[in-house]
Figure 1 (cartoon, rainbow, N blue to C red):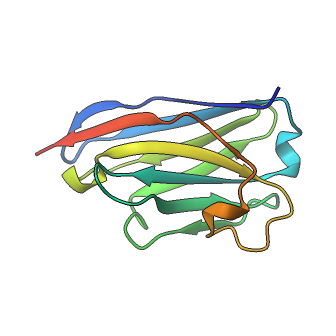
Figure 2: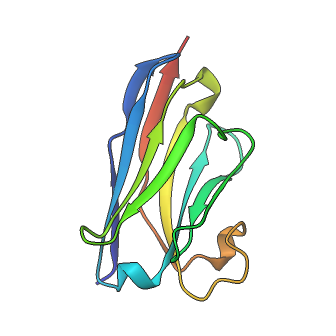
Length: 123
């Protein structure tokens, strides 16, 4: 059974940091590209960052310079270090796995999704 389990969410004041993790099981982690998405309350899902099999990364402008995506293939874990958090970063954060994706910026290219973890940033 494929599972992606996010952890590390919580409440923090603006300017603070959180580190999200996503633990994968049930598939070959190092053969999948990974991504982080978020869905703010009442808004559409937003792609934040992706990391390819070769370690290449991409960041949305909204998080570039503040968030860092990493992967630990030995531990089947995807991480998202979030610094200088802002109230507009408040959302449910999801990790996702993609195989043979042509465009990692498209949510439809991802095969598996986690259940999400809540991040709340207060001003």
